[in-house]
Image 1 (tube, rainbow, N blue to C red):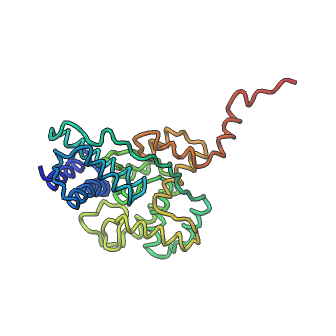
Image 2 (image 1 turned 135 degrees about the vertical axis):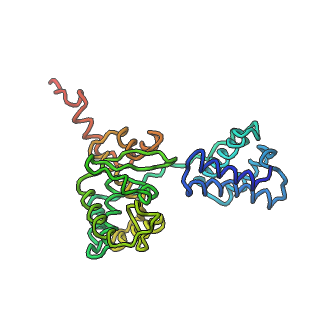
Image 3 (image 1 turned 30 degrees about the vertical axis):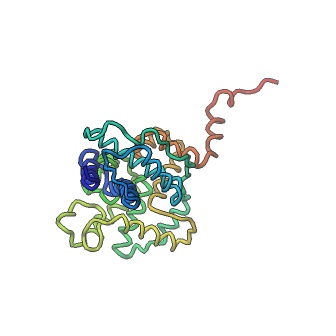
Length: 304
């Protein structure tokens, strides 16, 4: 089996069987291509079926000289998935990555914005233009619903259930969830939907897409990043901000205000509660208040 054929089949599997996004599939492909490039550079003739643990270890040793621990960990994870696929298809009986541990990486706490900072970002948007109305709706939806960028760009008119107070979100692996949406954000979206969006000549393929560019087509991830960066700079905020920062801020703020961690997990669409638990490390100031208010020993009066 040739590497290019195995990689192509792996990509099809990731898209069709696992339903992963194009962005995720690209990352998996790059991980495998790094190994392919190493084999070619060192004139090693192993196929995906015959490559052994020793060769993979040498590759990872060389990789560690040029990339950080986080990237190493991602490549190991991608290659492990690739060889698991080959086992699944009965091309191999073993996974050469099975005994290889990823390097320890510190858990990076997500950057967040305060409510005042978010208000200042929204405040610099020029609402006298159709683009301004759209961009305000984008920022408010990112923050109020905690969406990933891909979830925002794929949001449909048919996903809006405002009467019930929810939107339907399609997340990783095409898994759908319902996320609550407040009256304020509903109002902002409706203003955009019923005014700015109505003035566009909409591409027939994107009639149901909520957020559109000036050509009436779906916005790209890059455009959302540009929108966020532009208004962050205008607001004079010095932090490094991305669309994902609004998702982090959403989770942090509702946790600080008493939301249950399990509820946050469901709203964010996290597979594992351990992913959500990172927000417990962002701001612990509210935890002391919580235990003081609710723990019986804290409420019990001490006898003299």
